[in-house]
Image (cartoon, rainbow, N blue to C red; front, side):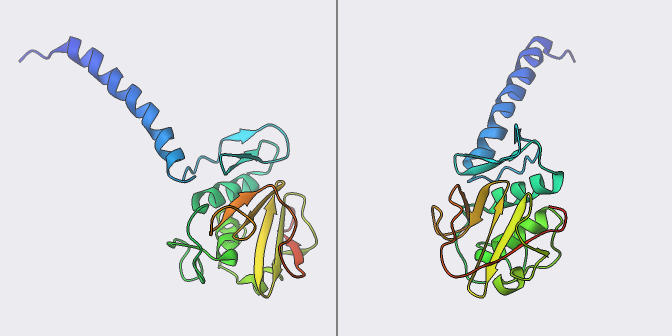
Length: 178
């Protein structure tokens, strides 16, 4: 049986071209669910593009992975206790979101509540990651962008350029070396 090679020569490249266009578009349309941690911007500050953080090229790989993990759950709904029973959840609270992102960078093994995050790592601001915690709230600043469930768009975790704390007095901590 003779194959129709002219059809194959046209159809296969056409299908591959369509797939190449659909994969990135689908990832971007999914509310920032792209896990591409290889995408970076020059320098040492993350950039906010369409609500999604783009990691700086100068950042250590762990920091880039924290940003990629946070992007995976940005815009998920706020859910009290979300992210504490299981890493993958339908929604996240403040500390669950911060814990998830830190876990993505292999910087945390188990989720912590906001009080636990106020004792996380080492005292003071970090060079790349600073975790802010008190008994009622937690958020973090990564490469110059804030990841939080408060003072951001929507009702769940998302990125913001605003670095001012929203309420109360916070203890500032950071992962050792970052």
